[in-house]
Amino acid sequence: MNIRILKISILIVAAGAILLLYFFVEPKNGILPKCFFHELTGLYCPGCGVQRSFHALLNGHILTAIDYNLLFILFLPLIIYFILAFALDKKHSFSSFIYKPVFSFTVVIVVVSFWVLRNIPMVPFSWLAP
Amino acid sequence: MAPPGPKGPFSENWLVEAILVTLLCCLPFGVVGIIFAAQVNTKQQAGDMEGAEKARRDAAKWTKIGFWVGLAWVILICIFYFFVGFAMLGFGAASMN
Image (tube, rainbow over the protein chains, first blue to last red):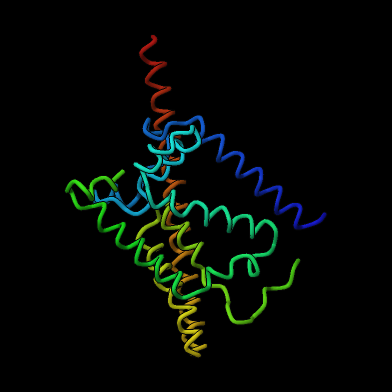
């Protein structure tokens, strides 16, 4: 058995299951697990709203998806790119820009400021909240 | 299996893994992972190979902690719903009598 084919087929089956789950299940009705951090502190984490955002995106509501979690939509191309690189076993040659210090520090600044800003209960910032 | 990637100018920095853990809600460990991941290549470029290796290991550690805590949370929720479902089934059966 070719291990790479096995790896890719597991990935495809898992991705298919996740896509189907989030296409049909509306996260707001409470079946899916809620955010650990939000349950404990009442604050939003950078990942709060990702499930609702993903559901909206799969159903074609891009603006709603952005409204739930802007960061997720911004990072989605990167995540898809990385999954493809992993599936094709070309992680290193594919993703060299990921290893640039400028890029990783931009990510740190964007994630941390997104986390802080979306918790400020005032108009321009509260748009970032889910 | 393919051999491990080239040990050239860049090595694993766990950045995307840490971003994924952060977005899939296992805070605050994912953010700690991102911060360490960002240090890996900076230290490497400055020639501090030991520091880069340490940052890489820390990034990996926090990302994995975040991943397992998140997974444990999801499993706990599933167990919780399982029992709530059973309780509701019992309730439904009782109210039908």
